[in-house]
Length: 188
Ligand code: NI
Image 1 (cartoon, helix red, strand yellow):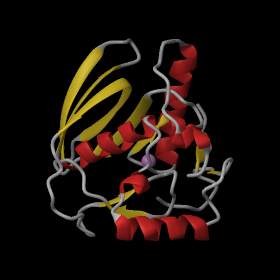
Image 2: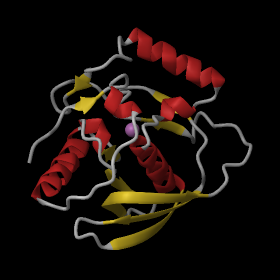
Image 3: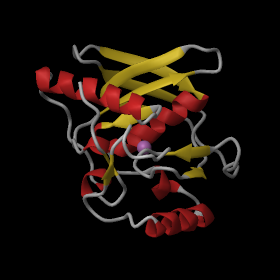
């Protein structure tokens, strides 16, 4: 297993739709192992394959919920159903989201409260998870990565401007930028 460099916003792989996984082979298994290790080292609660430069439709997640239950897994070729978001504005305290591909930054984003994830595992076995709250947010965030969408692309006008400024200030927004979990001192 190995920790992989994480691409930073600006790299085309992060901004393009990923491809359906068709080869359920050892290469895929290794990728998943490395993604778990990379997510742990970052640390993060989710990581999508495009973030490590692999344009395939899969993500991993690892999050302990409010009842201390570990929610950890892998979703390959996922589909996501989400409830309507409603009209309330994003709340600075409760809706603050981050991304390992925009390291060190957080901005509030309103997400759907409920999400139903359908995907397959490494054995191509289908499964379904009904998620609420933060897990629903994680699924929406990671699923977006597979369509080339970052959470900063979804921010409202004010926070979108702030994010664009932070990205410019950091010198990101161009191809080929990455950071190495465990080596580079960045937290997201
Ligand atoms: Ni992300």
